[in-house]
Length: 65
Image 1 (tube, one colour):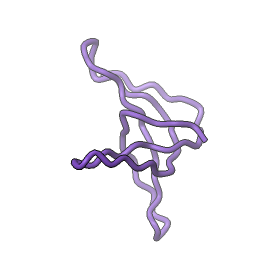
Image 2 (cartoon, helix red, strand yellow):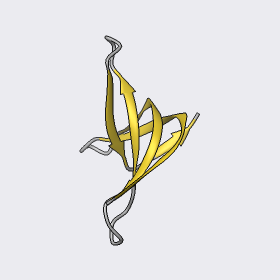
Image 3 (tube, helix red, strand yellow):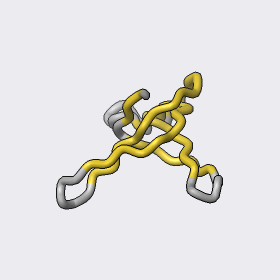
């Protein structure tokens, strides 16, 4: 398991719904996580809710602003 920090940058992460709809939401990318040599990496992201609480999560697709 490897987690690599990156210089934080603003981006949007993708959410795909079961009906095929895709939405993009704002986030800050802070790292990349690769669980093992056979897996695809994920971006480590920070998101903020409407109350100003910050959450850490991961995303398989992001796009820079």
